[in-house]
Amino acid sequence: MKTNIVLTISVCSILLMTACKNKTSSSNSKVAAMSSDSSVKKKTAAGTLVDIKPSGPAPAWAPDIKPQMLAVIEKLDSYGGKSPLKIGAAKARENLTIKDAVNDIIKEYHIPRPVYNIDTTGKEIPVKGGTMHISIYTSRNANGALPIIVYFHAGGFVVANIEVYAASAKILADKVGAVVISVGYRLAPEHKFPTAHNDAYAAYIWAIKNAASINGNPKKIALVGESAGGNLAISTAIKARDAGIMLPSAIVAIYPIVGTDTTTASYIKNANVEPLSRPLMVWFDKQYLNNEAEEKDPRMDLVDANLKGLPPTTVITDEIDPLNSEGLNLVRKLKAAGVSTSNRNYDGVTHEFFGFGAVIPEAKDAENYAVDQLKKVFQL
Image 1 (cartoon, rainbow, N blue to C red):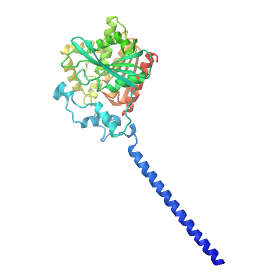
Image 2 (image 1 turned 90 degrees about the vertical axis):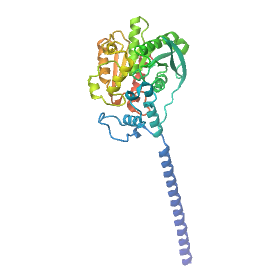
Image 3 (image 1 turned 135 degrees about the vertical axis):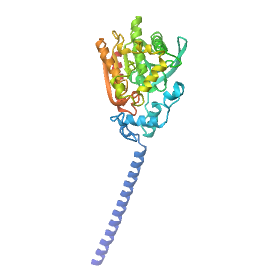
Image 4 (image 1 turned 180 degrees about the vertical axis):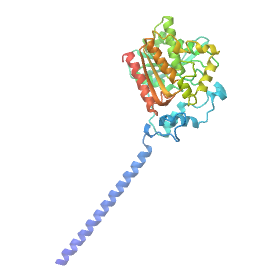
């Protein structure tokens, strides 16, 4: 009897140990499977802006550059594009751009691609001596007659086009809840000064007269531009004021070209930065202007122009940029002229950072700032 009891206990012990072993083995398998799944997810999950890292150290010309900004510059440099100073305007327009660099970083880091709730159409409008293309981005997020933003792209009056800076226009249309008219003004040196300025003004007049045809409100029109486009936005508003026609509701000028003095503090400090250097700015001027005397034309030298009576103006500037000093000087001149003026200056980023908030945090902030300023003026 005693022997049977011992045998029974031994058998039960063996069965219990086997069950425990199997359970542990099963648990370990599940943990391994979960670990494997997590590893897969980690590899395929969408990246974040924090993940974006440059491959090398900060350059001597920008020791405090933000990592995401440097990653974009490195990607742009990797394309091996030749300087416009060496190949001329026509060939320079074939170079890959900062838009391409940002798109490649989005792919590389699996960053979610921005989605804009807008409709897009194109149109040719008449200008002196021919026609000009405009792209119209219409928000699907709002009803009724929408506020209108006339947007002018960057490029030194010489390079780039609507598509290179489409992100900026689409962001404004989507987030403001507006109709954005992106203007394909004619470029130098084929079209010298003041062709781009005349085209910009023609686009503004077209917007006023044709607002109803694009579901826009003719009484709510703002002018927005980057770099050369920032100049065009301000110059167009000045011309409207002088002509006695309706002023725009607001101006947003993003690192605008508003002076011709290349000896300012930022021109000296940022003489050889990327993507916009002092030599490149000098070259842009030579392509667009007919002669040196035109550097003092108030449409080019806006910091010394009559700024009185302009609508509320927002100026966005950036640290690593030859144009930084003239942009901040413009802010002072606008305030002195009694213009309601707002400004944000972004450290650690370069010219052309705006519109690429998908990969650059400072750009995201600047975009939201511009949107908020426009909404305030449009009373949205």
